[in-house]
Length: 414
Ligand SMILES: *Cc1c(COP(=O)(O)O)cnc(C)c1O
Image 1 (cartoon, helix red, strand yellow):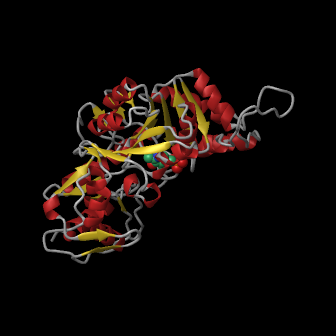
Image 2 (cartoon, helix red, strand yellow):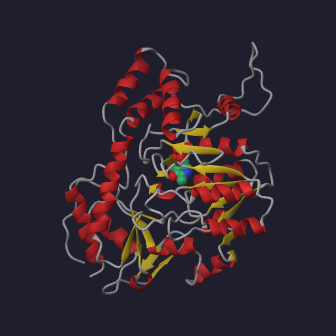
Image 3 (cartoon, rainbow, N blue to C red):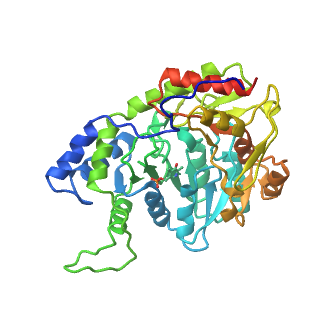
């Protein structure tokens, strides 16, 4: 590897970017003493997000995870019910199913979008015909083949929950992710494309569902003179202060998407003669699809992978001329003061979920777990985890900083 100067200022994977308007709305909340889970910012941001995404109702909550939890409840998932879930995703997609006693069944990904494979979903319904719901995530802001997935879910009488936590602003045929599901969730966590520092929303076209979610999120208080409780409640409502930050951020969502798209394009150009695919450039149906480019990722060609093994907490690789691997690139990036990350480790490889079914487009995929340990897995998720990585994608990264990162990645293949 060549000697490349470390960056003076650390470049993060994806960090909050404030603009100024956020403070104005927070100040209003402060000066009017609406420092609560009630207030004008909450009302405004709910209607602004609903109209931006194109759904009838948005319910402001404390996190995307809370939104997914209430979505699972609204879907009517009861203890023992199976829910067919994206396999390559963040654990917060799946954990809320377990909060309700549901049983996640993991559906393999496809190479084109890295999201749930509609073919594997069909196969999963053959093996698990009574599944109550489908939980699909749009990983890294690249839309899944969501219309096909919606059609398959509905043909099998399942409720479709869309985890659009990472994909706010991404569209398919001009329609926003988060508007295809029967219920959807978005997130305003600190690393997402816009942030409230935390926060999330549940999206639905049904007024009855929105009312239910609002009631559950505020401790399930009944309309009565005293605290009257007829069902289980939660403290999941968004703060009016957080809502103010999000109101200011929403004004800059399109700008963030444009900045992140430019980052993807700069990586694609700078790495174009390397044996890699830059995502989402390689995503299927890229024409009618607009990713939000939240994170730009890399997939190394199989023939250009140097040996790399991962245990539960550690890794080893052996560098070879002309070849590299994600852990080598991540080490090299970290050495110049920039932050990348491995691909989200698929759920079927997580020790916590080892007892759950996993289905690939070929059928039962659980044999793949042992194959993964032996290094011969053929499921898409394990392969993308092995060969892929997330690149520094912060929208404050300058072209000079990005060029330095590109130079480091190139040096790994020398
Ligand atoms: C961030 C994230 C969540 C959870 O959102 P929080 O607001 O952090 O609770 C859920 N699913 C995915 C895919 C995410 O990336």
